[in-house]
Image (cartoon, rainbow, N blue to C red; front, top):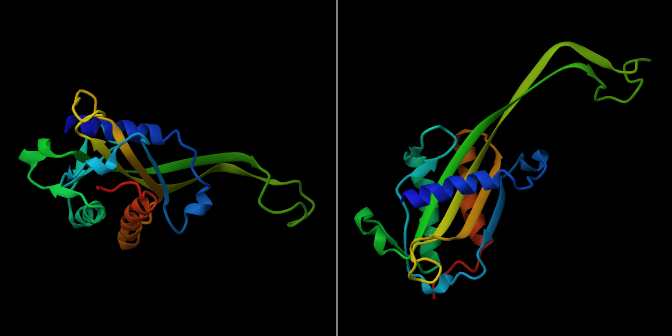
Length: 206
């Protein structure tokens, strides 16, 4: 499991390097990005282990999201995996028997912006009069909240089905956008799981 946690954190770091869409495009939904290992044999794997909590990244020490909202998100992941022909192993003591490991991670952050001094203004020249612009003689600050949900599928049998010294991440999904809070944001997170799998028809067992 430590390997899965490490991979999840590494993926979150890598995702910060991706080109994000314009923030104006994220006002009504989350942007969902997926990628996969084209050499992976998804069809030959039959079972998976999904932890009963969501890893919360971003703090010095890892924390786990376990309430009913987290269970609803995990339930969506389970439903999608089951619909693709995979069977979940729920007993943590038998997780080593699983073919695949599914890690769900979540990170939220608040971005603070402080501006001050000369500012050209939002309006065209002459809107308020014959001035070339205006300035704030004091700092102006604002902030906005964003959140990201990451789902990863790791091949627990190794790339060749036997070598477990290196566990490849064979599927990766990232859903990010504004954090609206409350039930609406929960609906966006659950919908993002469905969208991620919808974009990934190759994730299925034979």
